[in-house]
Image (cartoon, rainbow over all chains, first blue to last red; front, side, top):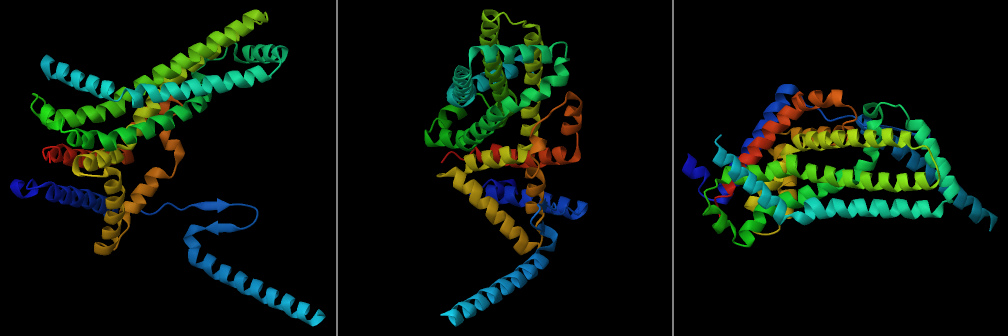
Length: 81
Length: 284
């Protein structure tokens, strides 16, 4: 077993990385390690990483509103000309 | 551990410091010089009377205050030095084992009665214990020069300097906090130290690229094989809060060292350092 692991630098690297990843995944599974939640607060809008899908939906809504306003402005401008 | 082993280890540490003087002595000296020059230039723009009034105000402010209570305020001045220490340590770690093979001096060092374990541990010891000592000494020299300049200014303007003495004592107390912060941060970042040493020993070219590229690949493979992202979560939880890299009070030192996250990081770092020790036997 030792001869296989220490055969060359590549096998040693692979074994080291496997042990490293194994320890991390085992610890993560046992302790239930979760990503940290970042909440950014500012007076203009609320951005919560947990609700990223909701942010995407609200952003597409605001994009649609902005496009509709731009089309209305363009129609008014062409009507004036 | 016998006396010969201790002398051997001391010789290895001395070798590391002598071969990397620029990183451990030159770099912080340059930072200290820049800070002194910038401060002197700013002081020259201010009228001497106003400067003397400011000095008198500071002297009254610090008079009689406990140095250990006001030491944390001097940690702000240490931030450029700590950033320099981390950058220089990363450069040192990624290059140290790689450079030995590139220059072929590894054949000479392996002919010495020194094991791969002693050599790699000496490099870890250099970064964790020895390098911060030099940085602290240079910060002390900077404070001393600043103190002398303030004393000359105070004496020439007949300002009471008793409070400045208390301020200097607080600055000296902050040096202990700076060293403890560097020590705690090194233990916290032991996995990073191990990772850089592993790829410094492994790579035949561009070790930094190998270290970064494989890290990304390992994260990808974890998601692909296990369907989890524990590596990313772990890295994020260790890197997110800048407060974990600095200590502001002595009471929190033991708590910062003996907690689960630090101890688990030491276990992970030990796995990677063990890989680096075995990797050093491949001299090609």
